[in-house]
Image (cartoon, rainbow, N blue to C red):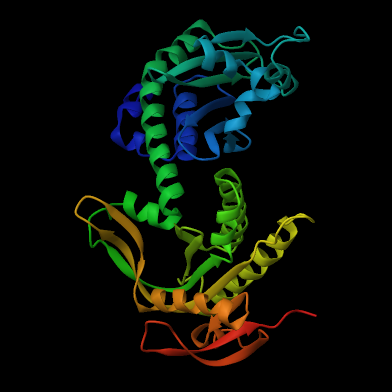
Length: 383
């Protein structure tokens, strides 16, 4: 099968970027072109990441560097051939003979150091206003022959098409992850996008809410309010995600998250992760507060139960979230943090999963608006 035939296969466009690059290298080398380095970028839409920069070598295979939006303003980017591609759509070919001029592209000096002899980079037009690139290099003593260069350049239009398709898929993944969460986004992408689609999930449930935030909002500007809210979400969100939790929703100044229980994470392990996330969040919020600043305080409720994880809403406006009595109970537990003067409250369902964790019972507490009551526990501070 020729490289062109392989690029035209629908299955090729369905590969993830890493697998695509590994397969592309194999196809090109099997076609007789002695490539020893390939690089391209998958452009996508993400709050922090502008592109996935993928590189391949025979020694390491495919690797990826996630480039932040700020990278395009960095010295490293501005001194790379990719900057020329992005701004003007102009490629270049360099015979790599030492010494190059001192002010030539740093990547070329690096490739010479590694024994490369020839370099080619060409623009990939993904959309009318969006470019990527494909870069090739070889260690072959005589560099690329005219025939080999022709094979590489003839692939550029098809590579533009395939990389554009992969970029769109990656952008969709990134957007769904940013707005729905990683697992919820994957479920939707795999076909769970109709109202009622979903599943029952056993999970440790997290509900947290900032304390006195309404008062803060009333006394400060909108810009100050947003800055404080985002700082708080950064700390709480990263603490949850660092422990494997899934943030499902920001509700005003509140956070709803779950630690799903699975074959690889049993109930006790998920409970420990949630407690560790709570402890980390509280500590980091204290560290985030400057000396003359009003402390950021939060209440956290942690519960366990079987919930429905899926789509709810109208016919044409859906939300992928968790619903069920345990979610309502967790929200009510969190609301008792202020009344009981505690930062973290665990239900008895969670406490029984943590026999080695020091907890203090606060007795049975009625949950507002629900017929049930729960024995609640607070964390015992470490000495």
